Image (cartoon, rainbow, N blue to C red; front, side, top):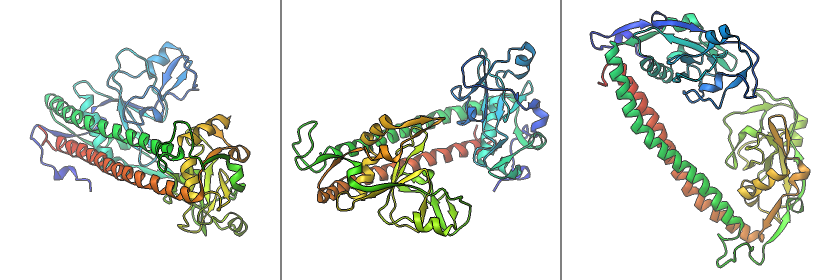
Length: 422
């Protein structure tokens, strides 16, 4: 629960201020035609501050060159951008502009906050971060479907803690010192995550080279009783999913491409259907393998195994592989289709559309698969799972450590704005 300002006892030379009282300007950005082509001036958008910094890889461009326009909408050093219309999670994200040479145009859907002289922008930037994570912005936001918003009037009326300017500077220096140490640890944790990702793919590579279940293999050769086949030789058919109109409530969930996560299905974000005919036709059976046929390039080809968790059907962007059970194990097939080898082949046969790629059923059946005898497939799966389970436990530990680092940052900010950090 957020503490009220009356609950806090901070140093006597500190005071409460309304944001509007310390701002020279709070304004919307320029609503102009934008382009992906790097010609003209870069212009900010919501995605520009996705990680609470100014990400110049996530801007668009405008051809407007009128000097008055550029002067009006160019960001100045220490200007703060504030996401005032967004999903609940992203609402209130801020970033501070730190360039004194480059031009970045202030675009629409972000508010510009320019503080008065004698007010330290970095100090207020950190206080914005604290308030967002503390839930203060979402508490005063107006809610609508899939997004929330804070208007300028409401934002100006929010209380901020303001000590003397020299104290503001000392607090910022201490925050940055502590955050720097934490960020070094976070960087190491992210590096470990990437190493685990590489390890997982290495395990799959070794598995489908036969190296997890066979010793003394010559490089580039499969075990003597393995053979290369096409996926079409191992299934009766491949089947596109349902095109039924889904809704928020209904009889059974409709699994979509976003539900595929790490070879399994994520059941936390579901849509539903009551269409009896579609349910009868597309009802999943335990052991069904579903392939994501269209999406952004990095997501096409993701595959998941349905384990009979609950009745469900599958959407049209997924393909059910009706495998011949006596020839290929469902786990073996799922692991292989998620391997770098299979994904690389998919990259070579996919077609491209606007902002997405596609692999149709005909191309899917051409996938080459190293086929082991069915009993050895089960051994391969067991060998993969034993190794990946260790990686999963390490991943869980890393995730917990990253969460603890974020909690510690918030604790540092809390102390800072209660007058207890320095």
